[in-house]
Length: 601
Image 1 (cartoon, one colour):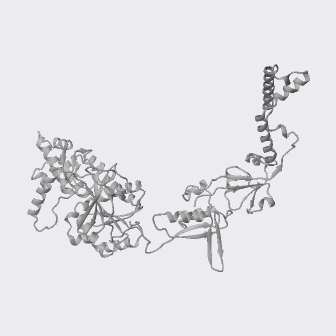
Image 2 (image 1 turned 90 degrees about the vertical axis):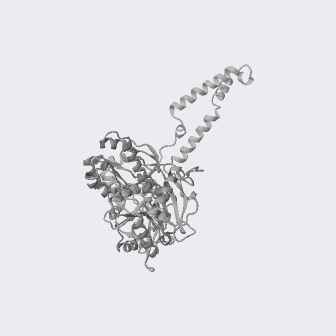
Image 3 (image 1 turned 90 degrees about the horizontal axis):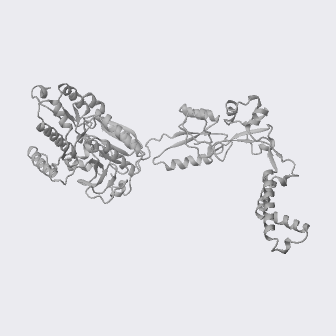
């Protein structure tokens, strides 16, 4: 209020958090004074509510995609995020990072919000993270808070082997200002920071003047006096306002806002221009690796292109960070950390397994009384074990036998009694309301097992290989072919002359001497003689529906409800049977329906 009322300023620069930005923008918009914010993100609703609010810091979406690309390169799948408990981080950073990680096949499994000022609670929170399974940490903190975090983590032995720490631009752009005693506790950190065209004369001149002035005003600071990302972005923001005021012909702030939005010049960060009241986002970030008393530049990541070892003249772009060379990890291991470890306190998942499965090739549960041990075997069990071994993290589990129907078994997931089910569980609609299923790994369907009967009279079976129309067609074509041969060759072939009876016999011999048709007929007749020895008594389900025949079904299968609800078969015609290997011989019902649907574990 003092700046606007007493000093009559025409623009305000400087808010760095969402809370600061919203407070200043609310007051400044009433006075129609442009406010240039350096918060992590400015949502669209904020610029609509406060039309004089501009975001002068670059959008963080590309930086979050760079971090996700690093996570994807090393095939890590779970990430813990540590951020400063301010509104801009929660609304700007976390959603972008979560979306980017999801696209890369990873996820945020835990978030830790730290207060702006260090507190004693940090040790307790780090102890919880240390006891967990995830070992990949993304840190989005201010310089002071990040230094305190890493010093505390180092004392708790969390900067050693198997730990991975990735920092954002808020900290990484200022690592040059950290003293050597503090940086010794940050060995192996991967950092992502904004890339600026440092080789251009304009940038070099700015850095030279910055170091000179900073050293004169703060002689007690003995570290490298290099400008950080915020200093560079602020310099460009001041220039955009200064150029707009220089061109302003009237003392109308509406004109000033419009001229700032029309900014188009080469600044220290590159091309400076605004889109939708926000400065154009950055597309290139540099990746550094803290080691020794300083850091090593590993390479660059560019939006849409991927990783490269240099930005000036890249030899090639690649999708994986592995091509940038060896990384110095915390604890200096020779291997790449896998990103997870065995949790300090195992809490195995309870996996339900059905007892009494009709298909023991899929699920077989046996209890050994002598050794007090339950054996779980079968294809479904082995498949589940193989999948767990392929997971990129540790997954403890225990098989729990379940004696009940398959419907009740699936309901146990809904009741939180089991974390999963492994077995020959069919995928049917009513079960999907209680649990999710994986894709089926065997063909599903219903089969109908019925008695067989011998085929009918085979006396005229020799006529069956061809249809009546086919027999007539063969006769006509054969006679025609014989007549043509006889007509052409009768004057040149002595065998075609002689008595009428002789010529007639020769004519029919020529007509039916067709080897192809003979072979086809023989093959069809042979197939019919071997395959038609037995025939089913029922060919389709419609016959069962109309005959009211007794139908048997498996005692633990879903077929009974399917027959009643879908096929509308009378319950009085259904009979429960326990499937046995020799049931075909002992089958009392006339027909038997059995499901062959093997569901996913």
